[in-house]
Length: 218
Image (cartoon, rainbow, N blue to C red; front, side, top):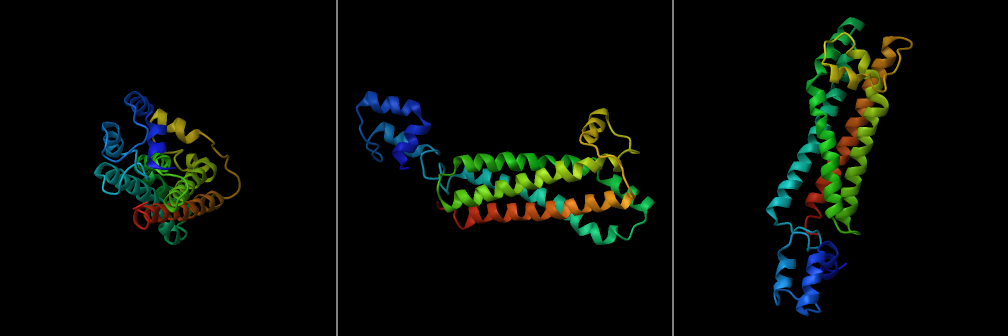
């Protein structure tokens, strides 16, 4: 899709202006309409040029959100060897230190998913940058899905003796999994989920970093 069709697609008002002015083609700088199109951040192949400071800033924010998501999961994964040495009482005590800090940090996952979705929307199809951005989004969505399907159902068990607010208690009670077997079963599920989440978040960060560097000019 060239710049003319792209501009017409995203700017209906400019299509009207083109028709009213009798301009048949979008020519760079030769008409007022063309000037608006060339100045617009949504009229370029990536709908923002690599030199556009606002979109560069948005890319940095996106990278930061994905990096925070990866950092939180990676921190859990790196704790695994040491935590496996803990007895039941010590392990349960350690588990409570993650709330509410890690819970607050978890909002970066939602922010990262939204930011990646916006970047994907702004990226022309097809193209290498589009596919790398899509990969980053898919990996981060999968990482978040692991939390709700595997991690969250056992979180309530760790905070059952911790004083939390009513909204927090409601949140942790969602998808609660009944305790069955030894406490180590829940420990192994919880720890393994964070290894998976760390891997998926790392793949997401690598993908969006590739899109932002190797294919920045697309």
